[in-house]
Image (cartoon, protein in one colour):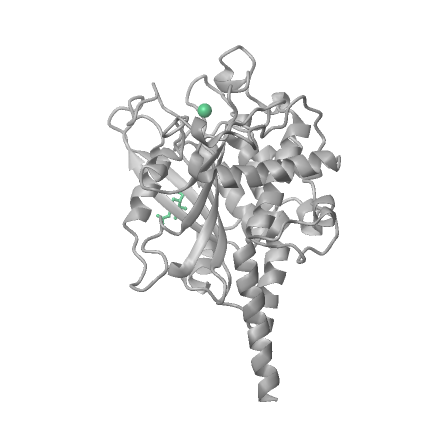
Length: 394
Ligand SMILES: *[C@@H]1O[C@H](CO)[C@@H](O)[C@H](O)[C@H]1NC(C)=O
Ligand SMILES: [Zn+2]
């Protein structure tokens, strides 16, 4: 009996070591085929995920508050296992004089249930939710309502598989043997400049968050020293949702992660699982020559304060920028100008990437269905009190 149990432990351990040595298990063709699409939830008028974000969301305005509430309501209703947190700050801006403008970052986290905070390395899925103050009424569909929506869809699509995987690990006694991995969503405020883009007039939310996390220490002997170290990859989505995007691989140290995503895109294109027809892939630089990475910080965006502190960045933003960017060429960046097949494909590619990162092959139920509760519209408004008590309970 004792021997039997003992050899089981060795078997588990051997599997774990093997898996760690080989890296992640690729998603099977079946898993790729069964990845859900957001369907009606991405409808720009009535979609339960996307429509409520397609309003002006200037920091400190009622529109911004409503979208914050939408995120919080949606997660509390659909993904109650995700821990909701805020990181708030205030700042003057060149457009608002002496007034302190509030900036509210919303952070959603799902970790293995047994893991200790300081020992969890997290994949951070990041997009900003604020919009430009001018032109008045600016919607920012690609910038970045659609990226926020893609992230919500991806979170929902992997949620059950994460539950299953973690339950299985606890049952087989292998919890705590592998490195602990979680997923975190950062909906950042105040990315846009109020007047002209400068170091001080931009990235309000990201700067405040990076600074705060750098000085939030974990207990001694934790795997990660502070909250910033816990971010194993900062995956930033921006300006996505226009047709035929071309995303270069910006950074040498995360090119492996870019390749990982590019490979998923290419597999799904070969299998005809994507809705778009393109003359080049969204991610065309799988085979980029390692000697040709030139940019140190890349395009100015929310990753800057994190990158400056040593966080690994995968920046998914097109070069050149889409035509609708900031309405500069007279084409408004609104819901009507999104290319929905492109939005759906990004959501799928992102979901697959998160699933592989979290090593979820074998934990999908094989149902390519939108969960029932996603079809219902959110009616229950959570109060701040509910949120606080949620937090205390966890
Ligand atoms: C941050 O701001 C939000 C939105 O105004 C508020 O609901 C929340 O309680 C604040 N959180 C903290 C920790 O101050
Ligand atoms: Zn912008």
